[in-house]
Image 1: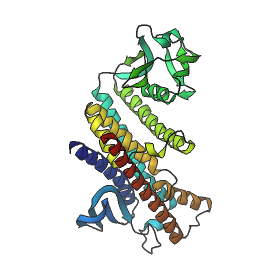
Image 2: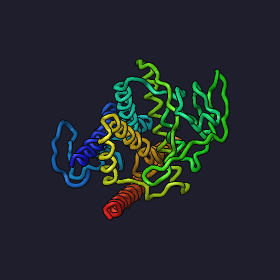
Image 3: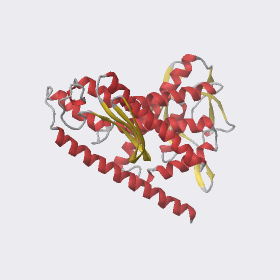
Image 4: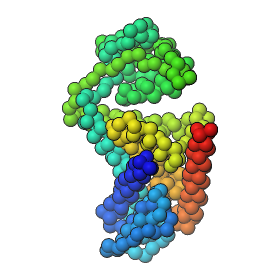
Length: 343
C-alpha cells in the first residue's frame, strides 16, 4: 500500500506540473481555458473559477488542459486556433519543459543534500584492479565509453552495462591530453547466479558549491534525457524488447524497491520519470505534444496555411487510441511478470 501511495503521489505531481505548464502558458498568452483536468474517466470533483472549470477525475492517469479552439475552429478572438503560431508552439511545449525543469530541480535538491559532487576522474583503484592493468591510471578523467560522451559518472556505469563482453574502448584526459585506451577489460563476478560487471575504481569527489551543484544537475538532466532517446533507439533496432517496458504496476514495484534504498534514490527515480515524461511527450506521435508540434511546424512551412482542424483531430484521435493500446499492453505485461515472479 505504501508503494502504491508513493507511486500515485509521484505521478500526480508529474502530471500536475505538466498540465500547469500548458495552463500557465495558455493564460499568459491570453487563450481561453475551458477546463483544467487531472486524471481520466468520470469526474469525481469539479468547481469553477472564472471562465475555467477545474476537475479531478477517477483514474489517476494523465490530465488535460482544454482550450477554446484547440481541436476546431472558433470565432472567439481568445481561442487557441486564433493565436499566432509562435504562441501556440510555446503553449504546446510548455508541459514538457516544465517536466524537464522539475527533473532538474529534484536533481539539484538531491545533489545539494549530498556531501560532495561526483566527477568522472579516477581517484583510486581496488587491489589488483583489472582496468588498471589495462592502462587506466589514477587522475584519468573518463571522457568517452565506446565513443559515447560521458557527462556524469553514472554514464560510465550505463555504457558498461550496455556492453556485451565487458571490454570497452575508453577515451580519457591525461595530463591535459586526450588518450584512447582500447580493449579495457572489466572483471565479471557471479552475483545472484548471474555474471555482474565490476567497477573496480572510485571517482574523485568535487567540492560542493552552488556552481558545481547547478552544473552537475544540468549535466545529469541531459544525461537522463539522452538515456530516454537511447532506449527508444534500442526498441526500434530490436536491441531491447517491448516486453521490457513497464506500466503502472511495474513502476509500483520499482518504486517499492528504490524506496527501501533511501529518499535520495527515490527522488532520483522521480526525476528520471518526469524527464522521461517530458521527452516522451515531445515525440512526433499524434495526440502527444510532439505530434501537435509537428502540425504547427507544417503550418509555418506552409506560410500560415493550417491543416483542416477536423482532419488533424482524427489523426490525434488515432494516436490517442494507439497510446491507450500501448498502456493496456504494458499493464498486461506487468501482470504476466508478476505471475512469473509468484511462480
